[in-house]
Every structure is written in C-alpha cells, then in structure tokens.
Amino acid sequence: MNYMDEFVLKVPVWQLVLGVLSVLFFVYRLAFRPQHLKSPEFYSHKKAKIQKIKKKFFPPPYPNGWIKLTSTADVATGNVKSISALGREFVAFRGKDGKVGVLDAYCPHLGAHLGQGGKVTSEGTLECPFHKWTFRPDGKTDKIPYCRTEVPDRARTKAYHVREHLGMVYVWFDAEEREPEWELEYHKDVADTNKFYYVTMRQMEFDQHVLEMHLNGQDYYHFQTLHRPLPLPFLEKFLFGFHELKARFNTDKGSPAPPHIFFFNEKMLKVFLFGMISIVPDFILRSIDTNVTFEGPCIVHFSVKTVFGEMRMIKNLMPVEPFHQYVEARWWAEKTVPRWMAFIMATVAGKALEQDRQVWENKIYHHKPMLVAGDGPFPAFKKFYMQFYSESSNKICEDELAW
Image (cartoon, rainbow, N blue to C red; front, side, top):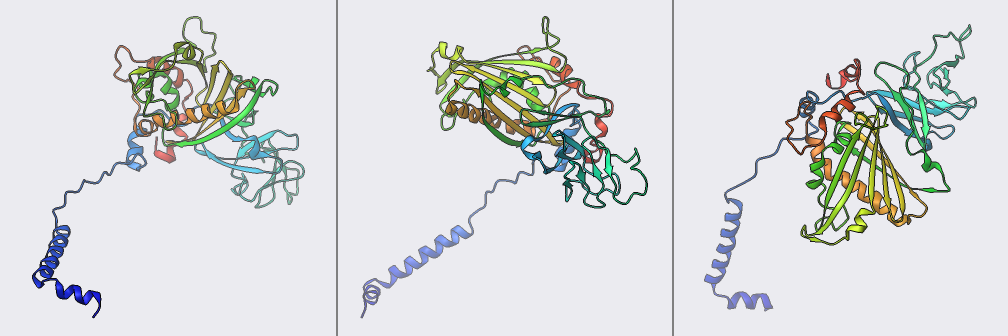
C-alpha cells in the first residue's frame, strides 16, 4: 500500500466531501459572479470621423514655405529617393553637377513612378523605368530613345526649387507655384567644424496638425502644467521646474526680424524637489539661456547657452498627411561642450515633446479662442502663421479629407 492510499484511508469521508464541495462552490462563484465591466471607449484620434471633425477647425494642412523633404545622405550619387508628403509624391536625386533635383514622382509620359525602378544614369539624369525617358534636375526631358525628332520643349515634368543646407534637402512649397520668398539663413555657422561638432539626430512622428509646435511657443502657462515635470529619465516624478517665457514677433516695436520669423525665449527660474524644495542655485539657472527662432511654418532653431558653451538644434516638420507629421531634430554643439552633455540635452528635448503629445494629437484649433488676462500672444501668432497660406492652399488636400 503506497502513501496516497494510506492518506485516503486516514482522512474521514466527510472531510473529503466537504473539500470537494468547497472547491466546486469556489469555481461556481468564480464562474457565475456578477460582472461589473467598464464600457469600451470608442474614441480614437485616428478615426476618420475625428479627422473630419478636426479639419473643420484647423487651417489647411500644407503651408507655403521651405520644407525639409529628405537628407543629403539619401541622395548620394546614384541614389533615387521617393518621398510622399504635402499631398504630393516626389522623387529626389543628385545630378551630374552635384546639385540635388526634386521632381514630381510621376512621369509625364504614361505615369510611371520615377522612384520605383528608376535610376540615375552616368550622365546624371533620372531614367524612367517604363520607356527610358531621362530627366534633368530642372525637370527637362533629356533623351527619349525612340523619338524621331528632337525632344520637344514641352517634354518636361514639374521640378521644385531646392536648397541643400547642413546635410538637409529643402524644397520650396507654394500652393500658387510662386518663386521662393525668402532664403534659409539661420544657424549656418554650425557648418564651421573648427567651432562646432555634429552631435546626433532624433526622429519622431506625431498625429497632429503642422501648426501645433509653433503654436506651443505662445502658450506660456502650459509650461507650468505639461512641462512642470522636468523631462529627465527616472527623475521626472521628483523634479519640477518653474519657467519664464517670452515670444517676440516681427510686428513688435524695434524687432528687426523679417515677416517669416519670430523669436521665443525660455528660462528656468526654479527647480524643485517634490515640488517644494528648491535644489538648484539661481546663478546656475541664470547661466542657461534658451532662444528659439521659428523660420517659416516648418523650421525651428534652438540655441541653448550654458557655462560650457552653446548647443544648437534644428527641428524640421514635414507634413506627411493632414494630421501626420514627421519631425526630425539635428543637434550640434560647440567643441567646449562635453559630448555626454549634448546627448543628454537631445534626450531631454525629445522627452519634452512627448509631454505634449497627448494634447496635440487630440485637440482642435480655435480661430477665435476664449482668451483671458495671462494668456499668451495668440492673436499675434495667428497673424504670423496665416501668412503662410494662400488662395489655393485649401485645394491641395481636397482628395484627402475634403478640406
């Protein structure tokens, strides 16, 4: 007789029955217990219904100006880059003269996509994969292999104005097809490798309207709410900041800025542990100065000055779709700034954007917001940003969301 048999014999039958009944009762109560479930939340900012609601409030999604479309690394000699943005399809390549060309992606002949199977020839032209038409960076057709006459002047595709700036390729986007109204001027000095070094690049995507990040600079008080926790890894639950902010537009008295520029200054006045104990001496905080330059509707320049030297960041927004932005931030630093410090700053800046994400991706835009004393300069911002729209701006995306 084994141990189990001895155990069964020693345990009274009523105890075994009671044990079985207890287990069955527990299973019964668990299986048939009253259900108190939370009702499902059917809201999602990505739903077509929400997109249609939002489009009623926001201005058109694709403002006029210089837009960073691709990178120098993407268009190395021989490469063809396909880009989908701004309600259009583009291809970029580098011509024989070394200059980047950006063309409409679809061949004017029979509509083949020049970036899907197309290649750059030894002559620096872009060859269509369908009938081997070749295009120069200016959009003019260079060769048609079977054409019995000279290539007609009308044989061309749309080409965009291009500027290559600090490893980034910009195009001039204008709903009326006008010539560029200004040039890219700010922070070109970071190209001086005797003074600055390149730090890193951060890439992010947001489901929001393109104006939100510019509008953010006018909302002074949200820095005391969303940005009160310092965006430092592992410390944001313990350290809190108090900010001072000031925006300055070209319409302000004494401002030398051209119409497509406005400035923004931010200072950290206090850093509190648990929101109560000031832990960073004032003289250290006063030594850090952040100045932001908004250049057109999609480019933001940051300058962060510290006792170690200056760090710079260029942030570009590329509207992929009406409510979808590709955001790229590139960092440089003076050679006196330790590389570890520059990397921390790049990380902090990225986390600061994440503090805004939930609000940005779910809000609407009021053309006439209900403002009170203490709000930021929203009317001045509206005047600034609306200059980047023109009569045809709302027609570009008609097929996307029936703007």
